[in-house]
Every structure is written in structure tokens, then in C-alpha cells.
Image (cartoon, rainbow, N blue to C red; front, side, top):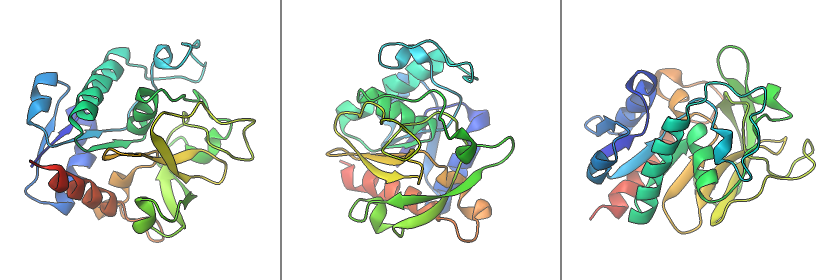
Length: 232
């Protein structure tokens, strides 16, 4: 089993560590090279900087709060995602990775959340509750309300008291987890093995496990089980 991590080696070691907690002998390949994707059984889209506004519906101007833009990286990650969608192979998107999944399926993105202070701080992760749909894939792993971590100021808007309206919803995706303010924390495809989380399970397992918070290891166990189920 080989999992491709579509990012940069210096910024993705926590994902490698989390995957190896579940399966010590798993092979990971940190790369953005399309030709190597043919060898991967699953794709992990990691967190990162903000997404190029040109990729959003109607190409709005960049919000003044946008930072760490890398338009080339965004398009490389989307190309790898497209390949896995067509191959119907498992995909796990985390933080920016979830946002890319939402955009790929024609959804929208808020460049700066009205409630960003709840989801990010200057150093470290914020801990906040999320509500999980009871009969979804995450509902089988976690209680209806649990604590997760986050470190983002962009996001997908759901239905909540802080927003006038939600973002344009994505095609073929279901919202399965939300923060109390309405920010979407989890999405999944209605037919394909594709899961996106706004929070960071790789920083809630192993040496990062925090009392009272969701155990992120369960996310990676689920991801590996999907890979085994879809393997030829």
C-alpha cells in the first residue's frame, strides 16, 4: 500500500507520522508529480496556505487577510485530486485539502471567516466543539458533539448564526460536520471514497493526543480501510 501526500516534505512529516501510527509499514510518497500518482493507492491533500482567489467561483479579488498564496501548488494539488476522482480511489483532504475538494466539486470558499478568531490564533491550534451528523461516516467514529482542533481563517460557510447565507454548495458532497458558528468541519462525497476535514487529525493523535478531544487516529484508520476496500 502506497499513499501519496500532495505537498512539500518539510511541511508534511506529521501526516507521515500519523499514518504510521495506524500501519507502521505503510509506504508514503511526498510528491506533486502526476506520473507518480499512478503508483498510489490513496491521496492525502494536506493543510497549507491560502488558496488562490482565481480558483474561486467568479474569481473575486484577494481578501486583504489572504497570505501564503501559492497558485502553482494549488493547481498541482487539484490535478492530483482530479486523477483520483476519475480513478475512484480514496482521498483524504485536511484543512486546505478539504477546501480544495470543495472547490473541485464547484463549491465556494470564504476568504476570511467572520468568526476567524474562533478557528485560529497566533500560535498553536484552537480547540472548539463540532456537531457531527449521526448517520454519516464520522458519526460512526465520534459522538454527536466532540472537540477538535483548527488553525485556519478561510473556510466553507454552512448554516449558522454568524452568517447571512452559506457558501455556494458543492456538487455531490454532503456536509457531515459543522462548528457551532456554522463553519463546515467535515464533508464527504455521496458516492466516492472522498473525505474532507477542516480540522487536523494528524495533530490529535500519538504524541499530539489531547485529553477530551477527538482521537485523530480514527480518521487515518478509516482512510486506510477505504484503501484496502478499493484495492484491486
